[in-house]
Every structure is written in structure tokens, then in C-alpha cells.
Image 1: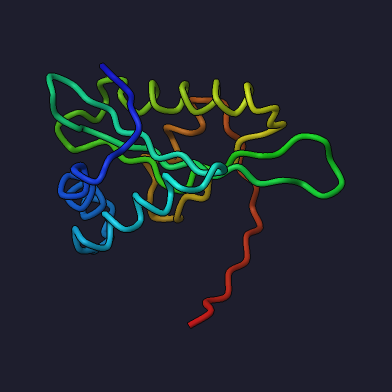
Image 2: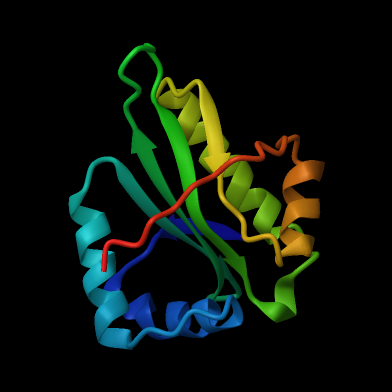
Length: 141
């Protein structure tokens, strides 16, 4: 398996993968988001490739902490296609993300996962992530 930076040509498959997470977006919109993330030094968008085809992705954001020396790394999305789940693709993406976070001096990883995503919760728990029960959100629009 190869992990590489996402490129605009990956937009169609990312749309398909996001649909598996119940997110709808157009290829044009995802292409623009790829460009935005490529231009941001504190973002990464990687895809997992097996036999020439993208089968998963992870997006990361590095966030400075005001009172602490280390940044933290937030996993904003991690998705592996239905046909590859359980084959270690997600773990390899997560391992690569954790290595990059360590290289950047992060003191923790963080991921938010909706309460309905029980398989994702089991995956993160197996990977050593602990639940942090409070999370508040307010939509701006």
C-alpha cells in the first residue's frame, strides 16, 4: 500500500468515499477543498492506494496550543472504502498520521467521531485512543 498526498484528480473517489460516511459533496467542491488543504502548511490530506486505486483517505489539521509547547493533531476525516475495511488500511493511515504528528512535536492526537459510528469507536479504542466525553458545537450558518 502507498500513502501519498491527495491531488485534484482524486476528487471523484473522495466523493465516493465521503458518501460512505453519509457526506454529499460535488467533485468540484472537493477539488477546491483539496487545493485549500494543499496550500495550508497545517493541513494534510493523504490517500491510501492499493494496486493503483485509491481505497481510503485521512485528513489532518495541526493546531497550536496557547499555554503548551506542543501542537495537537486533529484527524478530521478517516475513511476506508467498504471493500478494504478490516484489511489494515485505516491502521496504516493512522500510523502514518501519528508519525507525522510526532515529527511535528505534537503532544496528542484528537479525533471526533459521531456517536452513531460504533465501528469507528472500536477502531480508535483498539489503537489506544480514549474517549473524552464532552464536545460542544454551534453551527455558524
